[in-house]
Length: 353
Image: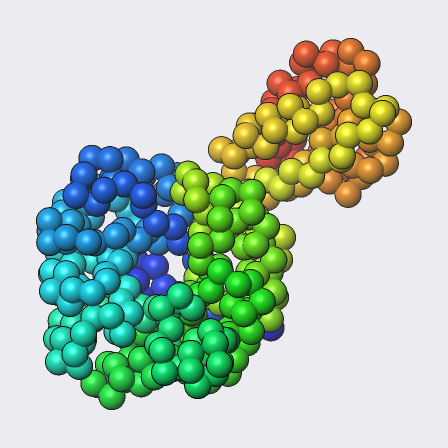
């Protein structure tokens, strides 16, 4: 059962409440380069990104948000560190949400100025706390960086802003330590009604980052915690979207899109199963069906193993089988196997009307 949090509007996307878990990513272009940033955001939109975050390290970057917003279709979050004036300029130039760590913004007066600016336009503030920036007094109190310290830091900052009369807030608490991050979310979830943005920070390259994020997000989301997610990877941001969609789908938290399952290779395999499975996965990205496709390496076990899939293919020596619900419907030359599957998928709704 998913924990019910307060509904918050980020541009045209609503999070929290009973809304679907939204997928976020972050651009890695120079925000000042409008053309490159817009191009990357449009690619991420196509991949399935719901909310995009951009770094705003300079006043020039803050001012370009207005131009970027004119050409994209998803909400834009301005990522701010240290300079409160950048947060205010980002709001003035159309940011749909700002991400700050009040601990590095400065004095209460500066935080108040940011809060007042956001209140005027009813822009949500994402309060972010990372284990790497935990205050020294909390590190000393808990004898190191701990989940308890992260939670106390976040709740203190939330209270600071709430005491300023503003509660249009989202919370983000992150760590690169998977189990610490999971524990922190378990501790904070019962203590707040604000939506939670979930992710494993600095998780690593596409390989290690995907594994750490899948484990961490799996633990957290399976407990009903989380309203938005990001899979943070050192790589192409489109990989973050692919992984986030698959994690949500695997947990039964999102429907839509073709799920590809494939068997591991073995000594019976007589086709390039690895290449075939990758081609199928790439091929189905733009096909809007909510079904399961199986890719099997041999005709001996293929039909039986693929029976839980809606459709599948199994390779043999120079030929392959097209399978529906475990029943062989067609035998085709190996060279035509991929095309036969694609043709079946493109006409799926007609065939199964």
